[in-house]
Length: 375
Image (cartoon, rainbow, N blue to C red; front, top):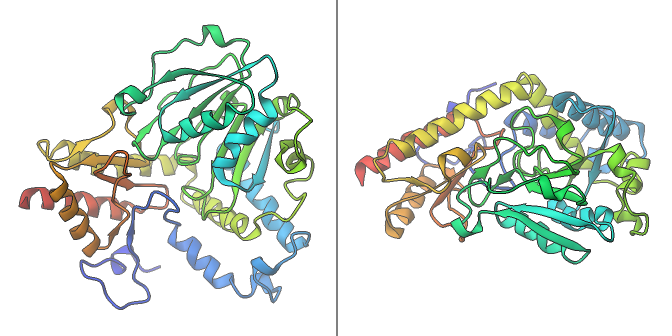
């Protein structure tokens, strides 16, 4: 395959092979080999004479795709047989409601640790279904760090503890997950598969696909079977996790093309050497950009404190708004896309998900240093 240097130049060319340096927060970069494989199979998947998008979800050909995705995810994340792997729709946002609808029993309290906007949204939805409690929050510090000022001693009778492992807007990330005395639930939408984790610390993990798993459209849920058995039964069919578990996520038509793309991404992760190799690559990618920030003599300032810095979303500010606009404009001219920060933080954000190549991060770091020296 032609190297990445072929695709990137300082000037935009009229070239169908042109690939941007994609730092979008989501939908985000998809590995180039995955896109090429999907392109190759788009019209005629495995000599069926049809696209994956046209296959019946009850067909043998699609069933193989579906089950391969589950098998790969189990293998790459070392998911025990005591867990179900489910494919849902509605993104992480639907999980904000489904979780309390299924697991917030009357007389119990759901505990939430707030580390950003998405954990706030999850809490807001849970309040409609029962008692909730904010166990800890870093909102007063504009979410510059992961909260640590909490005790797990007094939550032993709680329904569950919910955390958001990575915060796309603020650029913070959990380094160590709490050892919870009650079921631990994690929104891993923006950092699943970024490093090796112990799945057995969690009762439920959920992740929208559009960051590290592929295109938007499918949501992965990894749920402990024992925890699933405690779910309420008086919930609508399509909002019950049991519906998906009992039917291999094929009760109705699943997002077949998104699951196909997920399976290709998981094959790619395996070809890279698995999650351990991906983790090493992510650490090196982030270091390029954080070094450019830390060595800028204050020209760039990271939003997150050093102990909470994300490897997936690197947030930083420049000295003033004028320079920020100039930086973003010059970056765009060089095909660095998606660097504008969220409005609640301002500044800039580089999202360095698994599929973002190391060359892109090194090029951005070099541009940042060059821009700082010129301004």
